[in-house]
Length: 291
Image (cartoon, rainbow, N blue to C red; front, side):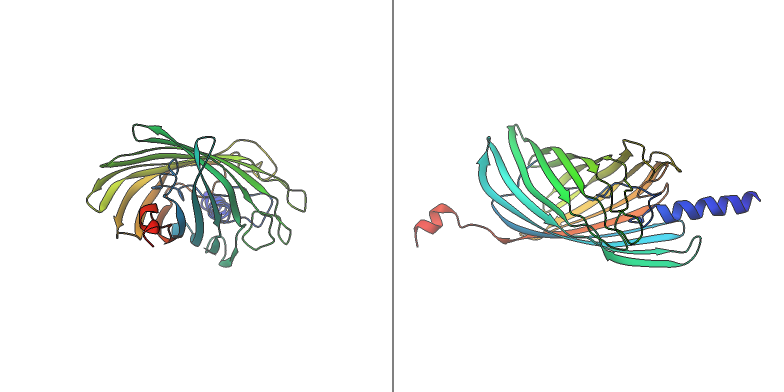
């Protein structure tokens, strides 16, 4: 009996964790924990247009997830209130596989994330601070956080980041406060708070370091009433290489603590690979004036 109970509990958690939920009784942060690790989001990129692609693979008890997350960022170089202005658009395609309690496969497009405003202040001495506001647009999808067959709500994210950049070090703490509206069936996912952090040492064109994440539900709704408010904490390592334009980051994490329903279960393992590069940068003023 105990074995059957444990298998049932494992099955419930397996369906919940890592799933961009299709049932109103499950919930998780809309931006998965860990996806901004290694990125010093407090500092604006040099002026230009940048593209990035994140590939994320996670595996745990009876489940796996594969995600492909392309994004585009415009760093204007213009200042508002003494801060550099940027904007981003992020897409996410998900593929989910479960073997507990039964074999199931789902795939599709997750909500589009639009970040129309990001302001970054140079605080001096290598420190940078940023604020941004983003919105996940409503969508009907097999992998959206919504009641089965219904259009999801809207997710609004307020992000703050504090970063330190020097010749030898890259450090950053990136936070996300998510506020979610009801889906078209009237079911609401809980609001949430995430933090991703990283400390990396630069060695020539290489960087190596440690990373981690934390994610917490900050309210109780019908979506997390059964399993309780969720939390998830993980740690891992980072390695990166600068190709002189394109930059590659690879991170691996292990979930060390978990409660309630979250994106990841305890002991889940995740690998994140990100390639980013500029597709356009303005010419330096001195060069342009010679033409």
